[in-house]
Amino acid sequence: MNAGFDRHYPAEVWEKYSMGMQSEDDCTPLEEHLLLCPACQDLVAQADEYIRVVKAAAALAAGTRRRLSKPMAAAATLVTALLFFWTATFS
Amino acid sequence: MAASLRAQNAPANEKETKDQDAKHALPGVAEAVDSGEDEQPSTSVDWPELVYRIQRGDESGMEDLYRLFARGIRFYLCRQLGMQELDDKVHDTFLIVVQAIRRGDLREPERLMGFVRTVVRRQVAAHIDQVVHSRRDELHLDVGVRVVDGRRNPEQNMAFQQKVDFMLEILNQLSDRDREILTRFYLHEESQEEICQEMDLTETQFRLLKSRAKARFGDLGKRKLQQKMLVPFFSRISAR
Image (cartoon, rainbow over all chains, first blue to last red):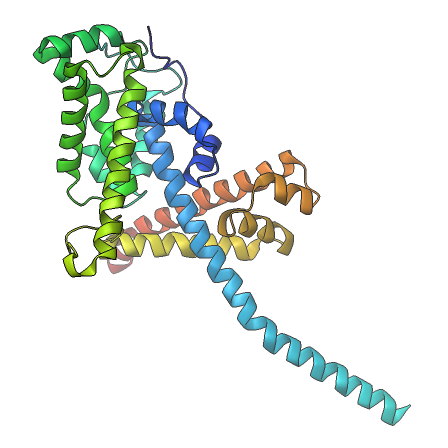
């Protein structure tokens, strides 16, 4: 019997695999292919690294936004209160 | 017998680029797989014949088995367990596979790939089990055992931080909605279907956003790299 190595799996499939989003059944042919295919091993290594980078950057971005959101909300409340005071006093 | 045919859809120049990229990927993985065989597997391997040669004790059978699986086994073990004692683990795996074949445990020789995968997965599970047990029983903790050795050297740390900065730059340029999509997928690990349904997106829009972000990340990386390479050039020019 011949092993099928006529094609590689696309990067998107490996990204899902790298994120653990493939079902156990889907993992079987993927991992068997991976054992023998250096090109797909490289794709998985790249996917692993890309995901780590996006995770780290997204966490930083979310943290920055969270940190900024409180002072921004406080500033908005203050401006609204001032506007209210201004219109109430001078109208 | 293992022939040295190159697999389709993997032109040489494309492979070179991928090799370059892989060098900057997971720490340890690139180095780990570099020491293995880099040959593309055959498009057609006669598994029963290979198993028969191993059972007979034929040296060429062992060589072919090693040539076919060494890189893949190293890659899998390194990815799951890290670089620590990697050579020993790869050796143990081969030993188990060869002994099982010789004992006749492999009933369907054409399923050799699946058999090797099972052995490797069991090795990973056994190692993790061992670590869990040694941690539970702290009195007998084996300090040499770790699940994944994720340590990076300072150079790798710097490269990683630079990539994170590039990605942060890209994320900050995106609209709130696009950034939310990527954050939900990569950071919160929500499924594509879930995100598409909740954010009223088509599958194509979702895939397009992801691939655009990846392409921009690649472009920005290349641009910054070119700038970095040009800095010493321009400093030399200006010094003259």
